[in-house]
Image 1: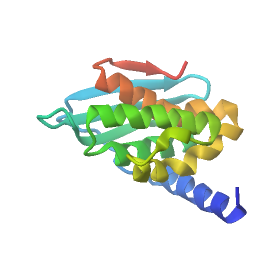
Image 2: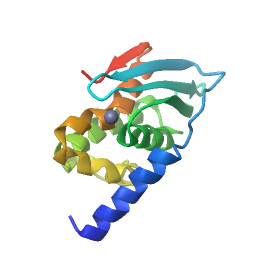
Image 3: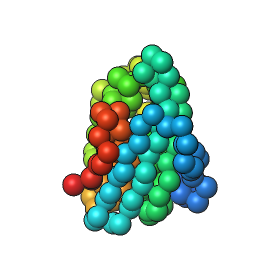
Length: 154
Ligand code: ZN
C-alpha cells in the first residue's frame, strides 16, 4: 500500500474514532442490539429505525471501545442508512472479508461506493487481534436485523 494512502486511511480512522458519527441513542428505535468484544473490551449498543418497507431509515450507536471499533461503528452507521436489510447483510459479509484479508474480490459493481467508504479499515487484516474490533459493529448490525439482542465477536 502506498504510504500516502495509508496516511489517509489512518486519518479517517482517527477522525471517526474521535468524533464518531451517529453517536447517540435513538429513542424511537425499532431494533437494538448490544455488541461485546471481550478480547479488547469494546462494547456498543446499536439502534435501528426501520422504514415500512424494512429498509434502514436511521442507525445510531453508543458505547465505549478502542478507536478502531468506534470508527468502524461510525462508518457502518453512515454506510447502512437507506439500505435494505439484504444490502446491509451483503455489506456486512463483504466488510468481514475486507477486514480479514485486506481485499474483497467480489465487491463488484453494486455497493462499490459503500465498500470504498469502508476501505480505510482494510488495514486491520495485518493485525489479527484487531479484526474483531473492526467487525464488532457489523456483527451487532446482523443481530439487530435478525431481531437478536446480543452479539459477540467470539
Ligand atoms: Zn477494540
